[in-house]
Image (cartoon, rainbow, N blue to C red; front, side, top):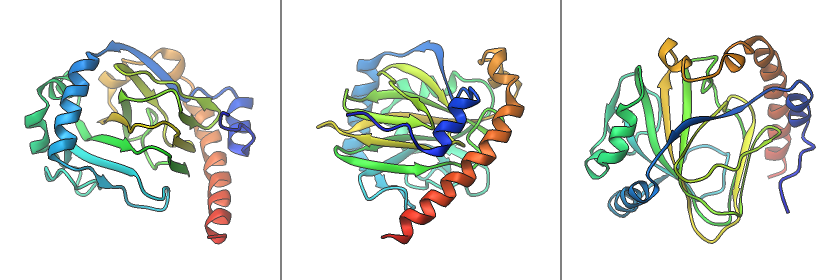
Length: 229
């Protein structure tokens, strides 16, 4: 049974035709990614994510972070450094280095089986704002349910995807194995924007208006959910 589509922010983004994801042309070597992923997880146990958007099982280890600490998940001073994790992942490092412009935070993110990430939205991870966030799925399964507002995201290993995570999003891993993505943030500049079709770049005004509405609706919903805990 799939995720529902009746939340008010989902109705808003669908009604106004807001496009929240985009598949880019690049395709990556899945066996290489998975081999490096296994080495990293064995050597560096991913740490639990902070916040109230999950109940455990959502973990990460940084490949690029503030200060070069594999477990420093926060944006601190805006200076990002490669971590020792990349010593185990030359292929991932070549992928990161292959993007234009300035690299911000890069993480290997894991969601364990039968775990949820609840509805929430991020502050500035959008092509319209400070950082653009790109995902490369490494390990996934057919029971993963993933939505960015009204869009159901079926992202396959080795693909490269953009998602506008300033809109409400959620995730459930209904499978028997962890779901792992390489999640890369890059500072928005003209070179990064050039990776995207004109239609996405030119619809900023609509997204800005609907984003504010969706954020407010999601805040009201999550406040109500937490009050029942």
